[in-house]
Amino acid sequence: MDAEEALASSAPTLDKADAGCLEETTSMETLEEVLHGGQLSCNHVDEVWPNLFLGDMFMSHDRYGLWLLGVTHVLNAAHGKMCCKGSDDFYGTTVSYYGVPANDLPTFDLSPFFYPSAQFIHQALTKPTAKVFVHCAVGVSRSAALVLAYLMIHHNYTLMNAILHVKENRWVFPNRGFLRQLQSLDEQLRRERTKRSHEECLHSREKRQTFHLGEN
Image (cartoon, rainbow, N blue to C red):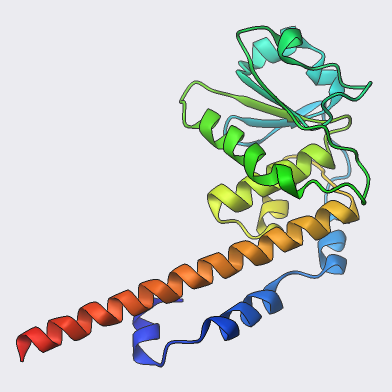
């Protein structure tokens, strides 16, 4: 909410603001319709954000290929699974590794890994020479969900906008369980942004009132 608009009218209560946030969350049907659209193929690795790459287990096993890309950080969303053999030992001391032992099942709760994974990516990308490779087995569900969460948490993207951005460069399709968890994250982040906006409006109003009292 714009601060000037807020000052021109009565400040909304947080309950009403929360309700508005929930109403704005994109439905599952709309999300899946968008995910089904566009290009329906992807490479072993695609750059979906500056210096952030999303890919599959084939690329994760290609240490020389990752070296050619300049990858300095690897996030494995299928850590410990037979198909993905990545680990600290596998990549050696030149690559920072973070493993998420997720199953690609709608019943698996990936949400506890949203913030730690987003922080791993964010901290890496604060270094100008860093490049992050995020993968799972196929690179469209587990790892894609973590990349979407990163864009939502650290770049203020809505879930829909995060999906649209990633799909510009790679086909992704998190399973329905992960999408529900991302919807919950979307709602949480909307509430937090609305609360911050509400508090900024109140602070701005208080400053104006103090200023006018000083003039008098």
